[in-house]
Length: 484
Image (cartoon, rainbow, N blue to C red; front, side, top):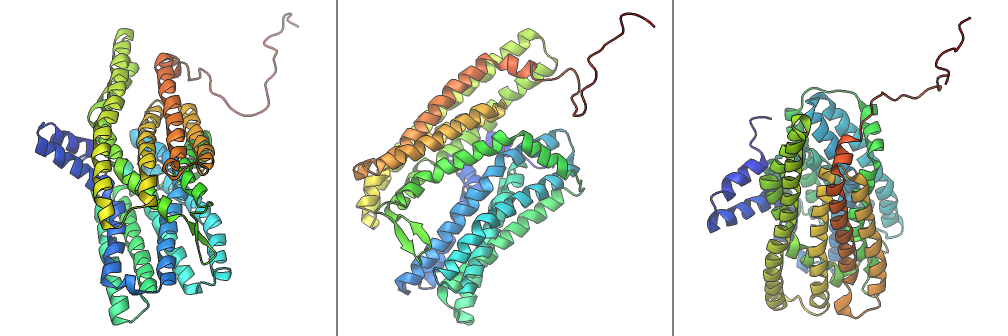
């Protein structure tokens, strides 16, 4: 592992050249190794659809396939998210302590939670699809397989992301999607299978190939296997706020879509799949408008803030009081600078992308409701990504209460405001996300200021002088006053 060049070091080497070309290359590199894997699936589906004549199929078949892939992606991501943060934290701890043999206990304990949650929610849904929606049982089973395999991909990414092996993640996605494309051609052209079934099966196999490759890489990194499963579950129980915080955030990310799935925009396929195409498409476009925030944040944190955070941590371990205070001031000054720079750069990018979308999308058929809903959602996603950057900084300082409250406020406010927005004109449909994100961001900002003022208490007054244990309380008598 020591021989692997970290993501941050690579970015530093690129950006320190301070030229326009190096900056463009740095952002392109960041996009390729962090976000591109998701787009490989989209590109693969588009290519398969074009080559296999997907547009010539009947409307019902096309809608069923589209909704199946959409639900696989959304709910595998949604159900894997709750455990991401706590397992990443545990992984970071065991890597810091060099207890690498405990990684597999963490992996299998987390996998058990992941698969249990996925099956608990997925099995009733797919049973409903078969019996109520009258969808062929083989099609349903393949859909369920793809849903679990995609969830496994997202789960494995937790561990590979901690190891900063983003290039391998992108490579495994590429291999899986290339294999899926080739298999789809074989199924349709040689075996003469139905197009949508062939595409769905090939995607499920591609997901499984990528997941297996990710697992094999983990096996190469970690060869010893510990069995401290109870320790992992205890750790998850102690950090329940982290689990809830991530759950609330991911629910807030999708809850405005779910609200509009219940309005007049809704579309129902085989009495099972529900969606709202105009709103969902506008959400996707708005997500693309601000998704570079993740890239910029990774770049800035890896290049600048992490060093200040490390300096402060080292000063706490063995530094003088004056050195600790100086490192603390520099760290929070850097934190404020990163948030301001993130807003500044992302605002410029979002405005440019927004103008490009508004000019060119109508020329390729995107107009009407989609472009009316899009502007408000674009503002909402911009604020949401900035808010999440602040929540990540709370994770740095182990402020789980603050992160939970920010995420909870974001989710509940987005839900309430989205319900209200359904009664407004079309251009204000995205107001729920805007209000929710601004509420979460406002709380996050003031919470970080509170953390800055109370960091000494948080750092130096959290430990215990005496070990704690469970059992019968000892007698309160210390000694006998009179000797017998």
